[in-house]
Figure 1 (cartoon, helix red, strand yellow):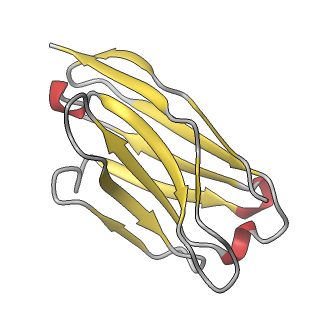
Figure 2 (tube, one colour):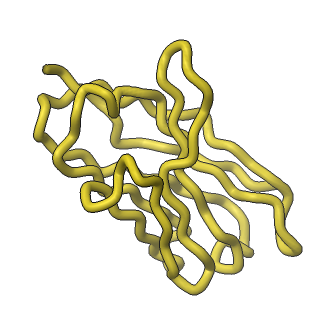
Length: 117
């Protein structure tokens, strides 16, 4: 069983920055790809960024050049660095472990990010 605990959300003005953290329990963290998703009110949950076990990253077009995902395997933690935030980035952000050979699928409880105009 893996537990994911997100932190770092909050209220920020347009153009500001935040860093989200996701602390994961479990000894196989380094073998798992990790994702960040987000869900805005009335919208479907959408993939924001992915980082593989090897550190390769991929981003949704709407955050490319503004957000960066990283991981610290020694701390069992994945980060989402968010810069140049826009009001449309307002959402609950979720940490996610995709199903793989090494793991079942897991979701964190989410952290709210609100960007004021």
